[in-house]
Amino acid sequence: MKHLFVCLLMGCLLVPAWGAEPAITFGEFLQKLEKAEPWTREKVEALLGVKLSEREGGEGGRGGHSARGQFVFAKGLIVKEIVLEVEGGTGETNILTLRLDEKSGCFKGDGSAKLYSSGGFLEEVTSSGDLGYIIKMPWGELVFTYDARRRFKCMEEIDIITNAFIKMYRD
Image (cartoon, rainbow, N blue to C red):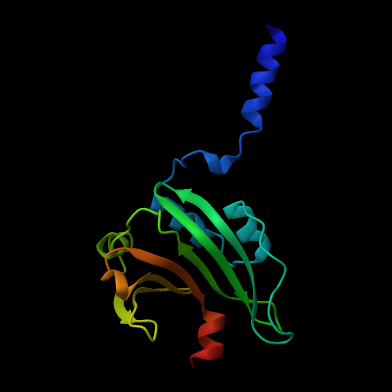
């Protein structure tokens, strides 16, 4: 009996965390994500529990670290790709992108807007007509992107765009 208990206990300890449904909500996940600022590779890996690739991209230019798979971070939130774009010269984070999986729950625009009292605004964010709900933050912008092909019904992507990127590439 004692051996059976030890076997069962060891089996429970070996079950991967991603196999269980997370207990946090989408809003709680966003709060945790924001608190990881500045978004270094190490902090993002620790927060999301994933291993990002070695830096990809040209020397001296923008590059990035990424991970692909099916990652469940909150109730109904399934991410298929994580990209952490960094500035080549400084290694400073430009953009953190979480691309949602087709199996992810449907996070609608009005739900995203309700999470932030400061409000935001809708703007076209891609050449294919995708809309982004953009919220200005002290560290940059939080953008929820909705695909035009799906009639803007469900969120497709979450982007954290840092002030470093905005100053370098938009100003």
